[in-house]
Each structure stands twice: as C-alpha cells, then as structure tokens.
Length: 150
Image 1 (tube, one colour):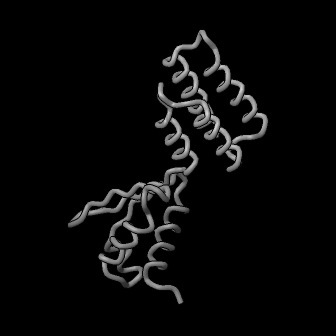
Image 2: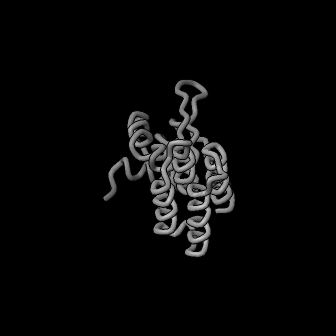
Image 3: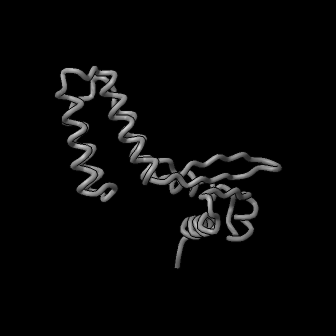
C-alpha cells in the first residue's frame, strides 16, 4: 500500500504528463479532495519531491483563489546551464574537458561531437591569438548551441 506522499506525487505527475508543455496549474483543495489528505501533506510533497534539483520549479499561492504551478524543467537544460555558469575567463582547460567528458558519459553528445568539442577547447586554450574574452564567448557559444539542439 502506498503512503499519502506517494499518492500525492503520483497524482501531480499524472497531471504533468497530461500536459504537452510540461506545466500544470493545480489547486491544493482539488488535490486534497481527490486524495483525501490535508493541504499540509501536499505542501510537504511539493517541498521534498518537486524541488529544483529534481528538475521542477514550483510556484505556490495560498488562500482563496490560490494555486500551485509546477513546471518540469528538462534536466538536460539544467546541466548545460550549470556548465555555462561555470565558464569564465578563469576557467581552466581541464575543467572544460571534464564538462565535455561528462556530456559524453551521460550520452548527451556523441563520440563525434565530443571529439569536435575537444578540438575547439584545445584551440581556444592553446592559440596565442584568442583572448580570454574570446575564449569564453567561443566556449559558451558551443555549449549554448548544444543546449538548443538537444
């Protein structure tokens, strides 16, 4: 037998799955009525199972006319965004190579894409004609392009 938290999570996930855009807006009272639970149990599930690190953004407004808006953020986009945030003029070549290796290990890119990316990384760091600002722009452009095409 499932516990209440599992039932609430399953209900919310079903509602999300029914939407094409990965967004759902629900009312706490509707969920509570459907599952026969207290609104505080819904709040608990939202704060523990629908977190940003698990790929969700939750906006909640309590009271009359209140709602819960849940948006499922593709995990891939979060990975690329994290990498983009780490690239600056002080980022060293092994760090960027590690990022490419991570993408390859997690099958977010192919071997061929990884090889091309490694060539760009080596060029960006070893060329005498590429400034730190140009290197940052080049590397961020490369990761943004991957994010947009994945």
